[in-house]
Length: 141
Image 1 (cartoon, helix red, strand yellow):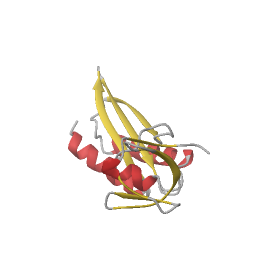
Image 2 (tube, helix red, strand yellow):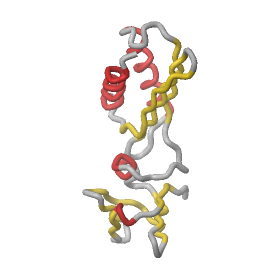
Image 3 (cartoon, rainbow, N blue to C red):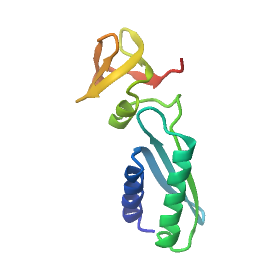
Image 4 (tube, rainbow, N blue to C red):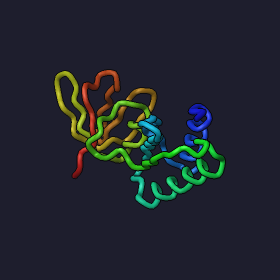
């Protein structure tokens, strides 16, 4: 398997569905490949969006013989609420979501309104540099 080629194709398929790629892992376990794709978008990603992307990825792998007939398992899903936030994609996809952000000396629980150049802006006007964050995750209301 040429992972660089497959990686590029998977990233293009995700972008084509107007989704954000949160994580992509491709591993080999015995004789099978495991491909895990985590996607999200501002708002929320739906099950039907994950299913549509899964079909497109499967079609691309099978039609173009990207795995040259080898066995594979494909998993396409959203990252879930309890996943720690730390990447630029995480911040962008979390806009308009309620976050719990731990700093050295306080905890902020508020709605993320904006992200730009390493700075989170919350609804109450508070700005936090991502470098100052010890831990952050989305909370359910």
